[in-house]
Length: 251
View 1 (tube, rainbow, N blue to C red):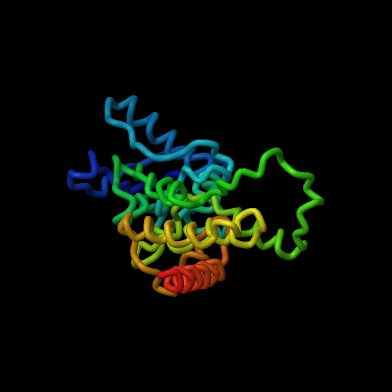
View 2 (cartoon, rainbow, N blue to C red):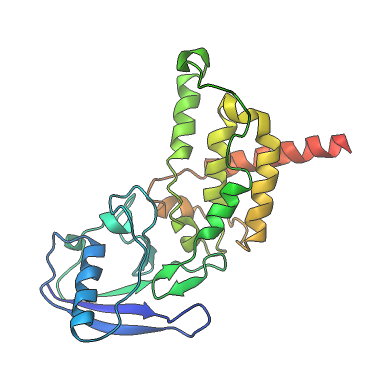
């Protein structure tokens, strides 16, 4: 299979970038999308050209490190699939593919397709944890949690923090990511002790990182590789309003 690739090349966050055309022959349909980029880089290195930088790690759809915009869609055309799990059989011979980085004010470009997503780490550090000293781990059956609540918490915890929600949102909002991290702990008894502190701090940090506000188009859920529900955002808003009310009563 032959492909015509238009790839975003940018030296660093302060330099101007541009789309560069490449042609790649003999692409195996069993390759993953990242393996195709590896093959392109091998071709570039053989031609004494600089390889394309892109994010990746486990290549099993688990870590959330990979992610590019393919033909205008974060992670590409397949629903609930990360870039590393997208295979070239989804494309046609002689097809032209546009490959761009995740674009958002909170995700500055490092180089080419590689972006800085450390803003997510800082949001987590601001409150996405349980710091109550509980001593040794208790017997699981001694903490009564209904099946429905446990499943809902697990559904929120499935977020891998890839940033596709930010890349697809027209406002560059990190609401779905932040909401999933808040919700997974707000639902469980271990997280309720710090629920007010958590939501106020994490939303404040999200705003500090210059992510946009939620635009309610639900595009984030559509292109999320884990299918994280926008109902998490409703839960986050509830937790925020509750925490704000309790804080105002203390004044």
